[in-house]
Image 1 (cartoon, rainbow, N blue to C red):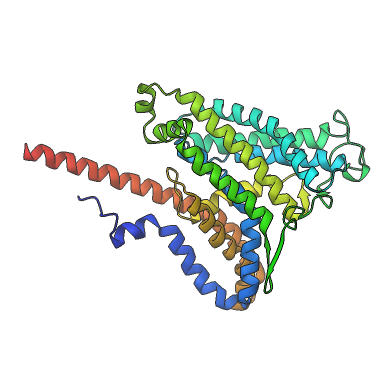
Image 2 (tube, rainbow, N blue to C red; image 1 turned 90 degrees about the horizontal axis):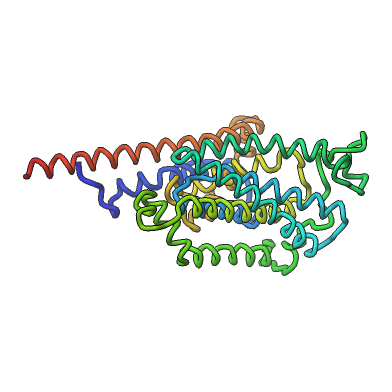
Length: 368
C-alpha cells in the first residue's frame, strides 16, 4: 500500500475533510440566511477579533505533542477572576484591561503548572485528562466565586454581590472596559468597522508563536512532539518542557479571555469559560488542525468558518424550515460534532499510516 502523494487530490481531501465539509454547509446556508455581504463581513471581523487570541493559545501544546489543550479553561477562569477584581476596584479603560491581565498571570502560571504536572502523569491521554481536570477546577472556581468572594475575599462593590451578602452575581457588567481596546484605533471602511488595536495585539501573539518555534525551547517542544522517547534520549527534559508548554497556553488563554470579554462587555460569571473552551477547540479543528498539527493559518480559517456558520444557521433554519430554534440546536450539535469528527479522522489517518508502514515492511522483507 503506497503512501499517497502529498500533492494528490486524495491526500488533500483526507487532510482537509473538516474545512471542506464546513465550506459546503456554509455555501448552502448563506443564500438561505438572507444576510447582506456587508453584515457577514462585519460579523466575521468581530468574531476574529474576539476569538482568535483564545484559539491561538492552543497551538503551543500541540507543538509539544500534548494534543488539544482542554485545560485552557483554567486560563479562562484566571482571566475572569482578574476582571472581577478590576470591576470591583472600578478601574477603567486600558488600565483595567492591563491590570486584569497582570492579575491573571500568577494564577494562570499556578494552574498551568498544576495541569502540566497532572498531564505528565497521564502521557498519551492528555486530552481526556485535561477535559476532566477542567471539570474539577470548574467546581473549585464556582466554590471560590460563589462562596469565597464577599465572605473571605472582600468585594466592596454591592452591585456585584448577591443579595445574601456574598457570592458574585450571575452576570457582571464590564462597562468600565467594554470595547476599550476595540475602539482605541477606530477605522471604518464603508460600513465595516475594524478594531485595529485588537488585531495588532493578535498579530503580536502570532509573531510570538513564530519566534518561539525558532527558539531552543520551541525546538525542544517540536522534538518532543515528534517522538518523546528520542527527545529524552537526546538530553531534553521532557516533563519540564511539557509543563512549560501548558503554562504558556494557560497564560495566553487568560489574556484571550480578557480580550474576549472586553468585546462582549458582560461577564457570565459561572459559564463563560466553559463555552470558549469548547468553541475554541472546535474552531481550530474546523480550520484543518489535528491532534498533532496546528498552524496559525488553521486558527484564522477555523474562526472564520466556524463562526460564519454560527451567524447564518439560525436565520437559515428559520427561512428553510420555519424554525429559528433548529438553527440554535444545530450550532450546539456542530460544536461538539466537529470535535468528534476531527478525532475520528485523526484516528483513521493514524490507522492508515500503520497499515502502510506494515505493508512497506512486509514488501521489504519479501525483496530480501
